[in-house]
Each structure stands twice: as C-alpha cells, then as structure tokens.
Length: 233
Ligand SMILES: *Cc1c(COP(=O)(O)O)cnc(C)c1O
Image 1 (tube, rainbow, N blue to C red):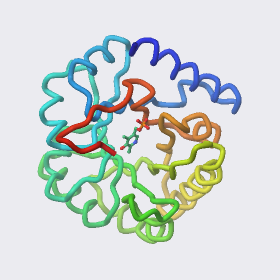
Image 2: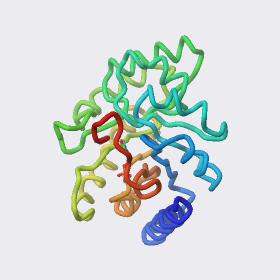
Image 3: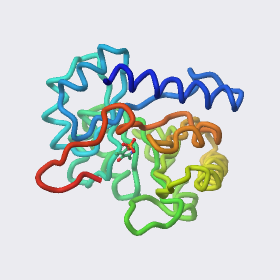
Image 4: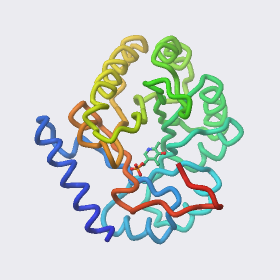
C-alpha cells in the first residue's frame, strides 16, 4: 500500500512540475510520519524515502532510534522553547520557527551543541487563530534580529495553507507566500531558497506556485491513527 501511495504521490509531483516547467528534483518530498509507527518508517526508507517529518518531541525521541539510520528528520510542529535542546539534538532541520523567543533558544542550544541549525520560519498567512506562525508583517520586521543569530541557518519559509475543499482556492495564499519570501530575502540580504508549502490535499497547486518542499502524510501513510484518545491534527 505504501509503495502504491508513493508512486501516486511521485506521479502527482512529476505532473505538477511538468505543468510549471520545473523538474521533480527541485521538489523535496518530506514524508510526514507523525503518529505512524517505526515499522512504517522502515518500510518507507526501503522504498527510497529519506526525509521524515515529526511534530512531537516525545514521539520522535521514541521512534528515531528504532528507524533506519539513513532516515533524516525535520521537526514540523510547534516547538516549545523548553524542548529546543532535544530538537537541536534530534533534527537536521526545524521547520516552524514561529517566534524570536524560540529562535533565540534554538540559537543558544545549537551553540551549546556546537552545531549550525537549518531552520524555516513558519508564517500564518491567513491569520487563523488555530495555527501558529508569524504574521507576514512581523516576520518581515524580525528578519534583521533573526539574521543576527549566527547558529541558525535560515533557509526559507514554511506555511500550512487554510483548509479548502478545492485546492484552487488557496492558490492566492501560496502566491502571496512566495512574494513574502522574496521580500524577507531582501530584508535579510541573503537568499531564502526553501519554500515549504503543500500537503496531501494541495501539493499540486503549491508546486505550481513555487514550492521546493512538500510535506505529505496522509497520501503516503493513510489516515493517522488516533493517539492517546484524541484526534491528531
Ligand atoms: C500533519 C502535517 C502535515 C501532513 O498533512 P497531510 O494532510 O496528512 O499530508 C504537513 N505539515 C504539517 C506542518 C503537519 O503538521
């Protein structure tokens, strides 16, 4: 089942790239393995997937040691500052840096661990109260302060588009997000090559609008199992 799902997802990525004059190698697939067991990750690694997204530190701490060592890990959720030390130790990238406080704490922990940490800044494009992330205005205003955190390598931006039954409806959100990236790069005085946008339901539109990274869970692994009696978001 995973093998079939993966070929469907790869095909969707390839078609979206073809439509927009891009090549599939331009788009990194992050397999979102949150709530799925280590066995599913091992199977995915066997099929050639390399980058996995997890959204909770506790869960990642338990699963990462059980997964094949070839797997690489991106933190994609909301990170509390008191988990920054673990995040720096476990993950090769933290997507979803959503405040200066968190960025400063990551800087401090990266410094202690003598590491440089690639990060993406999460932007809440539609101002949804259910989501974390900077507003477009505050992220722009924070670029200078963020740029001074030498242990962080700001590679780009990440967003979760509002849910829409028809993904065409979120095309303008993705487009504005890319424009915001360009303005942030200007402010920073450095390129921000990574645009992490697009998930199971809207990856085609995201790629057509310039995504360089798509984060796909359900379309690969199926519906997420319930954990601890509550539905994972
Ligand atoms: C869970 C999650 C995803 C994956 O969503 P799907 O709709 O299952 O593909 C992507 N990005 C983030 C930040 C997530 O939390």
